[in-house]
Length: 381
Image 1 (cartoon, rainbow, N blue to C red):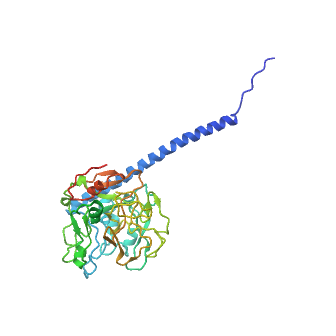
Image 2: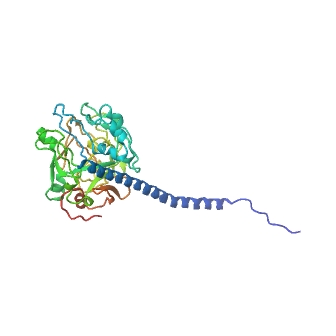
Image 3: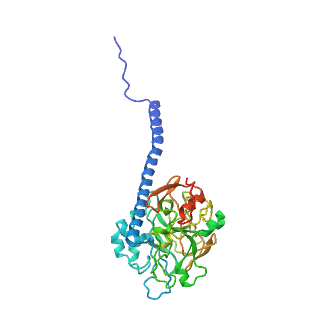
């Protein structure tokens, strides 16, 4: 009698384990590619956001014949209507399809007062890089009219106008004279001696303040001030992760920068920077360091930290009584160029174009890109 072989109805254990191992290897190979593709898409969206900001700047300049400027006017001009603090990004709202917010925004009062609070709290997609894990969190208002930080006031932006470069970057770090110094006209008016002085960036602060009257009657900065060329000058930088402190992609875990109200907390890592409606979210370049605490004032261009950590530093109505490279911090922001993209960050140039700069760029070359009339020969990386 003929015998037929029995058909096997299932895999053996060994075969099943081999299949599972192969699937695991394929998934392991595929996941990095998927993650890389997702990050490429996020980086492209970030670039598009900065492109929109560049276009908004040009439309503003075309309409006003001057560039927007963040205002931190003198407070001793009675009934001038000019005492409020207004950010560059606030003035760009109508050119970013945010007219509804701008029309309700009251520029006669500060960004953290009355009707401006719910508007400042608005999360605006064009201001947020999709690679930022903390995108759009609510920044605090620093001590001033109160003795403590006030939580939940302004939605954070990942993009910051560059208003200047610290003179010490040139004289102390690069060993060369500082070019094109800009003296804050509001401080000249109030008699501060010496006034806050820095190397002019694309958006110098208080540029429309008349140093003789303290009123907003002067002609602001224009494209003609950028003698280095619009295509050779960076105007807006990524500055992500604020008001938290990040060092080399690691968020410092001391306290909670969003909720801690202590004006001199010895445990909370925080920056004075973040909210889109805050003039303090504009940045001045100091250069970065490798200090694990988050410290500015070194010869690294960007991406080691997103700003100067105020942990344990008292913030009063006059701001911070500390200097970086000899320049007072005071009430000016402590943010810095920083991104969550691998290998660099996006920057908007004066001509409205966007470029991804490598974070290994030579420090001198990077600073040359930020001056508006330095006359440098630029060797980019």
